Image 1 (cartoon, rainbow, N blue to C red):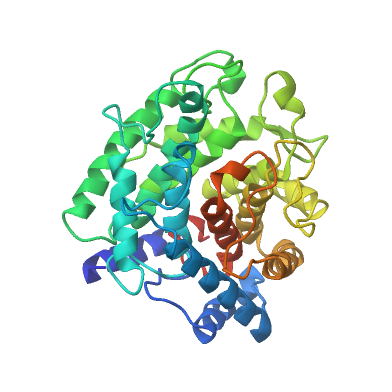
Image 2 (tube, rainbow, N blue to C red; image 1 turned 90 degrees about the vertical axis):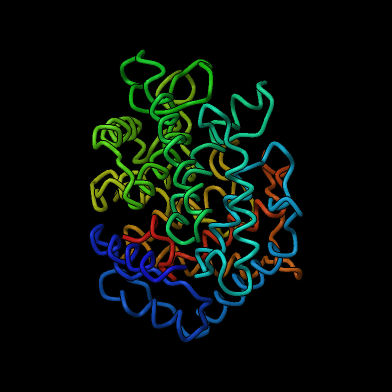
Length: 385
């Protein structure tokens, strides 16, 4: 990483009220403990030395597994249906531990993975490498913002000309994202959100919208021009998904989607509001209590609905509870850490998702597990508060 680029990222961290500067080297238990204690009073990040060691060992072992399962083209193992999102998750898993492109033991691998993700961008700006069929329509809606989010996180960390390629890719992706946000104007209650790449019974859902919001926020943090109304429109949609009666967020606002309340969408709702600066709203506080009533101590088991993927939910809820901090984080995270540590496989991976996403493989489940565990390090800019 160039010194001037790291300085730019740290400056951005201050501007956006982030609590710690961005790290760029592999951490140790002592370094992680220092990172955690720096925000103890305001964040409630209290881990014992034994817990820090447990966290370090879990994450480092998981990263070693991922590093051993990268393909020659730079992608991490997953079926075509899972790309480029799975590779993007894997890159962010390494970043969340302080590893950066072109530096350290995994630097070259990260650079290759980034090049692979950039190569999947289509002429219209969409990140997706699937034929235009039903799978393209559904999964492409996720691949695009997830790939964009990852590239926003690494922008400024890489050397020229890779950095130039990333910038161009993000700019093109942002145009496509806005086009999709404006694709449908009816019904009015769904305006501002995102859905699949073609109309499919409803025009917005919280799951896709949350990823697009993260992409926009990451790009904004990286100094791309994101008009405020693009984010405001999306946040307004997120708020309409909140149900005071259930004390959480629904998957959507049309048809049966109004009655789908999962841990995944609870975390997505809180995180979406947090990225817009609304950390302690009544909606977020009520939803945090919803999450605490439905913990992740039954490993790889679904939650309230068939839509509730275990790793997906754990990732979202961990990031969301970290944003809230305090008692919510203290009640949530130690149990999650213990559950994941107790169920990690001997080779460093975690079991495939037991729900519908099982075919996406071990790199999918392992990268999500790492991202659920690493908020205490406070190293991914998008998830710092």
